[in-house]
Amino acid sequence: MASIFTKIVEGEIPAYKVAEDENYLAFLDIFPLAKGHVLVIPKKEVDYLFDLDDELYAGLQLFAKRVAVALKKAIPCKKVGVAVLGLEVPHAHIHLVPMQSEKDINFSNPKLKLSEEEFKEITEKIKKEL
View 1 (cartoon, rainbow, N blue to C red):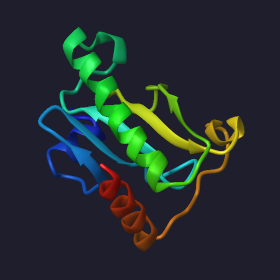
View 2 (view 1 turned 135 degrees about the vertical axis):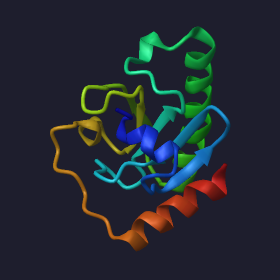
View 3 (view 1 turned 60 degrees about the vertical axis):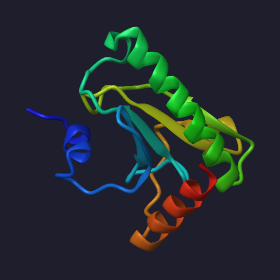
């Protein structure tokens, strides 16, 4: 059965997409730790990040870097934190989280509740910086 991320890639589930190419997709996390929290995935469904072949893995990291640079310009923060957890969805993914302090990337923190308008506004801000 396809993961929720594969369903997003295939257009079966909507997402706030901030960047996309033939191999990778970046979209806003709908349960964000901070405004601008982005998930970056390979379009190919592979459960474990380190099971990606070297070319796809390297490309994912470079794609995530490009998104992180745009994210930092779009959402004022000290740094963009990077986390790889991968237990909740069986599809390799990287979390990019705008941070003012290390506390901002604690996944035990309560998630933000943003309106559709806020998600759209954040999406456009990031896209403008790519």
